[in-house]
Amino acid sequence: MAPGRIESTTTTVVLFDAARPLVLESGERLEHVEVAFETWGELNADASNAVFVCHALTGDAHASGSDVDPGWWDTMVGPGKPVDTERFFVICPNLLGGCRGTTGPSSIDPGTGSAYGLNFPLLSIRDFVTVHRALLAHLGVKRLLAGVGGSLGGMQVLQWALDAPEEIAHPVVVAASSRLSAQNIAFSAVARSAIMGDPEFKDGLFLDSPDAEGPRTGLAIARMMAHITYLSEQAMAEKFGRRIQDGAEPRRRFGVDFAVESYLEHQGSTFLDRFDPFSYLYLTRALDYFDPFAEQGALSRVIAQPTRFLVVAFDSDWRFSTSHSRRIAHTLERAGVPTSFREISSPHGHDSFLLEVPDYLDTVRAFLDHASEAAHAS
Amino acid sequence: MRPDLEVIAGLVPPGARVLDLGCGDGQLLQTLIQQRGCSGTGVENDPESLIAAIRRGVSVMEVDIDDEDPAGLAEFADSTYDLVIVSQTLQTTRRPDRVLDHVQRIAGRGIISVPNFGYWKHRFQLLVGGRMPVSSAIPHPWYDTPNIHLSSLRDVETLIAERGFEVQEQVTLGRDGFAIRTPVPNVVASGAVYLLG
Image (cartoon, rainbow over all chains, first blue to last red; front, side, top):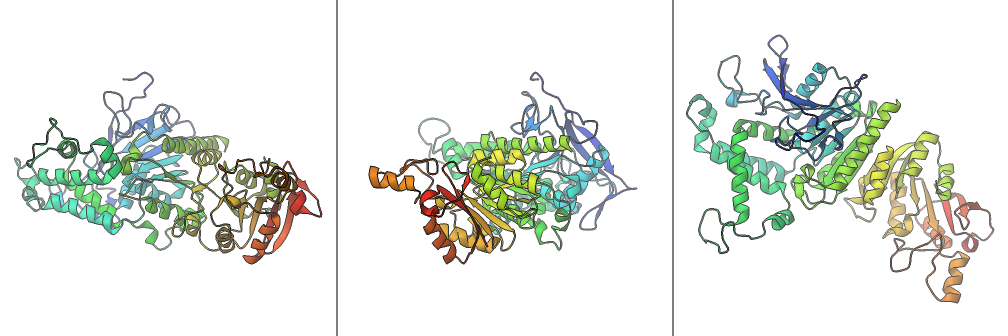
């Protein structure tokens, strides 16, 4: 444990039960919803220093960690980091439909006593936010100083700020999209085909047979392909080039030969230990349908109760290119919502939002420093 | 605050929604918000300035004014601001005429502040010294300057009229950027601020 690091432990809380079920946007109900979350730092006396972190597709509650147990967003969240755990009370839950402690499709359906599998209802980004808001109420926080998220995390922050701007004073939306393009949906479709087309998927019934391995090949392929879209061509060229993995000479046969192949295979296989194929299906599907600005009166709440947005994109991100973020920023700006927008120059592609990119981290720091100052002044 | 920015601030109607093209570190917008009850957005493309403006609590958008449709100023919708400020920026853009068209479209009203290449000191340096002028108004050497479209005040006034604007107010600036009165601004002024409508 590094000196001065404020440790956190994962807590699980039941936020919805039979008496108070979670009603999804689709109208379907979940009668038992547990949420795994971590917090860092201390909530101050007037509860004005809370910052909510929303994770991306395959993240979890462990946003910030120690040297031996790193968090997925240690560049952003921690002591002295832009989301400063020494000043802010930071909350990060695993999202609904996930597989890292929060109720998801592999959880037990209390109605049947066996895992939901494909009987789990389809989810929307708004459903994730509904659960986040319940967690916030559980923690006794009425208004967040900021909500921060990258990629799918940024989409949750956006939806939250549109639905309940009074709860989130400074939304930070990084490398996100307000509407997936055909290409984005196409990538999701191939990932899901890999999982559902794996013979071990067995139409989703593999959970019922105790010794079944599940669609491991399909899930690994989905992850491998997704990883290609998270890096820029330049980042891949710099990281791997055409380097041969073992030895100086190529073996010239199928199987792993190039370094990039070894990397992707590693990403795919390590993913199997920590991720659930059903969560992958449900979460990617929620992304596909996300289109918050298309709703009637989508902006009416945020116009009535303006919050201050920060929208950030990376110039080498082709998963959600700058035009996605620019659309978010200008849609808000045109409606008169105070919005700052940055297009950060970074060679790392979509993954930039997780990496040490000084211009980006300085921007978020400046935004949150002002937010904190303004909260103290008021 | 820079004296020419003080002049601009004095021309902005209280409560106006302002778009500031080339807003730098957001000082002018912050002053307008705090002292004149304005709201608005800055446009800038220098990372350090953008971070400084965000740190002040000013909303800024990283936009390259020179980008053509669909990026650039085209992203700002018609009639979404009361006023567009173009302070010491017009001469740095690739197409000042198109920038004025955007001002017309976005707000129909603008304040522009420009250096005067026709300033007597500039004329003198070119005429007698035979070299491109360098002064407090245009402080950069010719080979390394953001000012790629220098003009005299008369040139600017011609362009303003061509783009369908009327000069509603004009403030001429002296050597240090303070307002001065002169019958021959195109020679005596180091720059000018125009309120366009």
